[in-house]
Image (tube, rainbow, N blue to C red; front, side, top):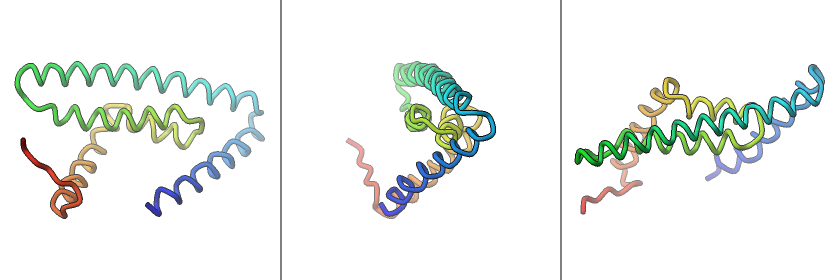
Length: 129
């Protein structure tokens, strides 16, 4: 919980500093244009990736296979879309990393290990119906 509070304070401060620094180099209108452009591209990419993941999950479920990879993809895409929707270059970079399939794959391995560790510690309780 402390990390979340610290991130909510530090990340906006870094974003504002980056806006001011880049705005001094390129001019403020270019920064506004880049913020809007990365937001539009990012959200449309996240929507496309989300729909592809949804279709893959439906295909897996129709075959009777649990869509475990697709669930992890969906979580990454959702979090990435939230980051892409918020203005800022740092959050956009993290958002693109979570949304793009070739950068999302290594993160899924880390998330899977973290979930397995939390299940082993009893932080996450998994029950089969």
